[in-house]
Length: 284
Image (cartoon, rainbow, N blue to C red; front, side, top):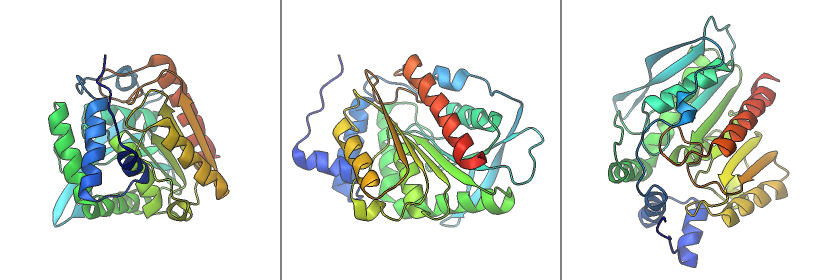
C-alpha cells in the first residue's frame, strides 16, 4: 500500500494554484515524490510501442539558454513535407530519457514533427530522490525553462516550418505543458496535459486561446480530482474549449513513458484521445 499523503488546506491550495514560490514548489515536489514511491524510470508499454509509420529521429541543438546550448530529440515522419505540424514534447520528472524519445517518435509516426525538449540541462534521474532534485532545480529557475520553451517553439516554427504547433507533457511535463500555453497563449494551437500541476485562477487562464485536453486519474493524490474539476470549471466559465477526462481507478503517472504505474486500459484510451485531439486541432 502506498503511503497516504496528508495535505492541509493551505498545501492543497498551493498544489492547485501553480505558483512558484520556493516553499510551494517544495510542497509540490514532496507530493510527486509520494506518488512515485518505489518507482523507477523503466520503460512502460507506452514507450515500447513502435511508431505507427516510419520516422526519422536525431538529437538537435534547438536553443541556447544562459549561454549554454540545449539539445533535444527531433522526430519527424519519414519524408515529412514542409509545413508539417509540430509538437513540443515535455518530459516527465525523470528527464529526457530514451522513453520520452520513444514517445516523440510515436507522435512523429502520427504525422507530426515532434521536438522532445530538455528542461534538466542534459541530466536524467535514475531514482526518485534525484528526480525530485532535478525537478526542484528546474522549477526554481523557471525563467530558464520558459526561455527554453520559447526557443523550442521558435525552432519548430522557423527551422522546421511548422504551420501549427501543439504541446504535450506528462507529470512534471504536464504542468509545463500548461505553462507553455500560458507563456505563448496566442501561438500554441493545442495543449495536452497529462496529470500536470494546474492553475485554477480564471484571471490567469483568461489569455488561453487554444483547445485544451486534460488527462487525469481518479486516484492521483498529487493532482487531486477537486483541483482538476476547479481547473475545468474555470476554463468553461471563460468559454474555453477544454476537454477533461478523469480515469476511474487510475493513479498518477498511469500513462507515463517511464515507471511502473502504467494502467493499460486507461493509458491506451488516453493515447487514442490524444491522437484524435491533435488530428483535429493541428491537422483538421
